[in-house]
Length: 270
Image 1: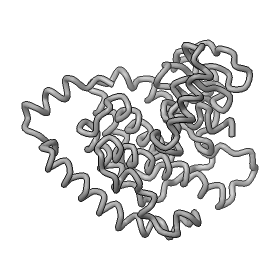
Image 2 (image 1 turned 90 degrees about the vertical axis):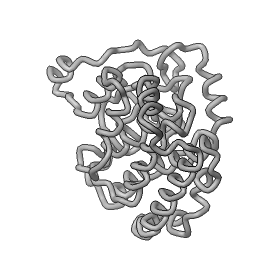
Image 3 (image 1 turned 45 degrees about the horizontal axis):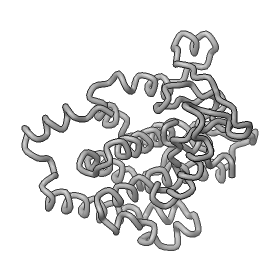
């Protein structure tokens, strides 16, 4: 249970989950390397596995528990952890260079940052897919509005039915032999991170169909049958895409005139 409230399960540590990403992580919120992400946390925890509005009470309790810490802290011992800025030189010297962490460390230097989000989309690399979904959710949470996020959510929905691929070195497991079950569990980490983002978009936009998207998925989700669910998602992703476009169009926000769009780009700074 503790790991659910660790940095591994927080969207601020975009490139890792409970089963994805070995070694050190990187927190975009605190701009720090996370040497032991399964043992650290902070009061700004935003869980990957469930939409925020579903677990809001638990997150508020967690925030209260760690309110006395300005940055990250030891999850078990409740002691502050010193922040350590990313160093590419240090990573190469220790033979710990990680391209995802390298990219995330430079995230805030990309202006406007939405270009970074778009660049992370596409492909079937599982860890990259996890990073993309986490960044979208973080962006949406910071903006607090669906109008600046619908493009990213539309892109994420297109990727929802795809089966992510994980090389062995990307799976965080103590098992010597990585069997099919462990690899499928990693797929679920990506799926729930994405689905929770779609539900959070539903919350911000007031689209209840998306808020409770899990209710529209049949027995394959309950049974955790990825093969069956991915077929259902091919249908649902099309329906949800049409729903978002129709809603944004009705609200006058679907790719507004250039002058308005330019204002948005200048405003966006997360």
